[in-house]
Amino acid sequence: MSDTPSIPPPGGQKPKPEIPPPKVKPKNIQPKPEPLSGGGSLEYMGFQFSSEKDLETFRTKFLANMMNMMMAQMKSENDRMLKAIKKLNPNTPQ
Image 1: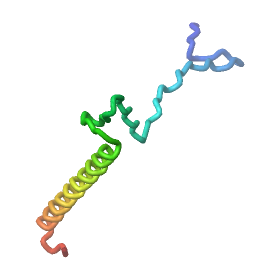
Image 2: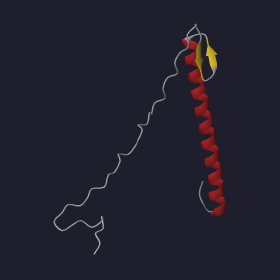
Image 3: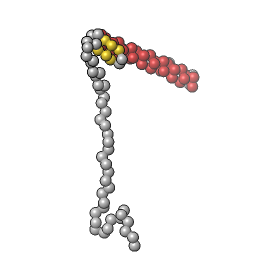
Image 4: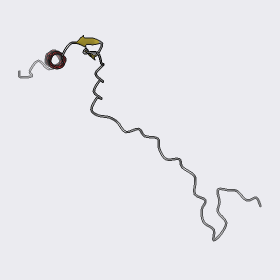
């Protein structure tokens, strides 16, 4: 009879497999602020700004523009889906 390592001997303990701990990196939800470069000029996303106020104005306008584009895209997709549903079932109320 041959001894196999997967079967423990009678009265013995089962061998514990060595499982390495999972390598999970924590997710950073908030983006890291870009470091401000020296020399009196501020750089953000490849753009140069002369003051902190100009930088904040750019960020605000950029985010507002992105939000408006996303809302317009969602509205057009919603309209397109409603047309497709109406085409499938013409008795659907608006």
